[in-house]
Amino acid sequence: MKPVKVGICGLGTVGGGTFNVLERNAAEIARRAGRGIEVAQIAARHANPKCNTGDTPITTDIFDVANNPEIDIVVELIGGYTLARELVLKAIENGKHVVTANKALIAVHGNEIFARAREKGVIVAFEASVAGGIPIIKAIREGLAGNQINWLAGIINGTGNFILTEMREKGRTFEDVLKEAQELGYAETDPTFDVEGIDAAHKLTILASIAFGVPLQFDKAYTEGISKLTTADVNYAEALGYRIKHLGVARSTASGIELRVHPTLIPADRLIANVNGVMNAVMVNGDAVGSTLYYGAGAGMEPTASAVVADLVDVARALTTDPNNRVPHLAFQPDSLSAHPILPIGACESAYYLRIQAKDRPGVLAQVATILSERGINIESIMQKEAEEQDGLVPVILVTHRVVEQRIDDAIAALEALADVVGNVVRIRVEQLN
Image (cartoon, rainbow, N blue to C red; front, side, top):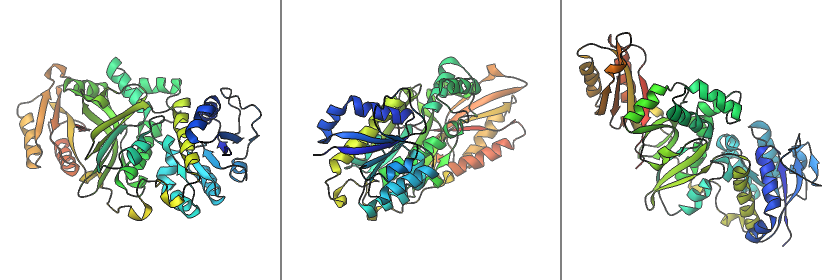
């Protein structure tokens, strides 16, 4: 069969990696796809010194690619919301298939994009939008199709994981490690998307839709960052047998779906608790298979390109398939998506780590226990660090059993109102991930 013609929009890190992999592995890719996959045009504002494009036509206008009648598949690697959305919709309007690594685009505009793609009978593939080179979307959408997914939890932002790893292993402060992460290129000059959980929430929104068969609802995802974590909290967690990870959690309950990103204590013996540095991992629990773990490079030039090229192979294989018989974008047939609601964070259930700065006086622990007991909150473990007394204050650290978050919020408000408690109570959620 004639080769599939591809147009790459964006020749940055991922675009350059995609071009290189397609060139280097051209013969192997053709064997897998059943036909060749050739880059017929590139849209880029700047050359990439790590990518030798040879005589491949290059334009500075991305819409030249979307409007090129020779192009079968448009690869969107420019990032962002607005221009990327316009490019993808134009490509779809022109009857072209699309491959993208843009998690923000899919999380925010995916419902609209997939609806347009169905109308035109084209594919929008987005494996590279979540966890880089880890084929987690295919694993959930196809490999676990026989399961009812109960929950998933993931370390899906390498920057945050690098920072927490350095804080735990070397006792460094958040600010110190963030500066190094920026110097190494792991974090942007404005690191908000990474350290405040927005990037992870984009990815979690996509995973939850595929896992539970609900529309994409990024605006309902709860996000909490890691910038307020201290080395003391990291060390206390270690003493209690836990590791702190910036985790995305999606859980299906009878009341609705939990969709939340926040710092989380995980038992130190869990495999996912030992994912360090910039690596990513996603744990998925299905009713038939139990818990499975997917680990690998969550970003980078060729790891992400690996996922982009895998999508290109999938599209090439499906070009002659009846559009109605292709794998649905969000795993479930469009008319079978569920209206199961996304729960507000106050209705979500978890166990909790609390750090309380209290005056070193008799009866303080009794007051704390009474406040928790009155709200139906059971204590699993408690630790009072008298050796760390400073200015008459000692840290009291405790871990609760699972409870609805609203009860914890009420308890924290009552604790902070005590005369013997100074400052805000630090709260971190705890997940066993069995």
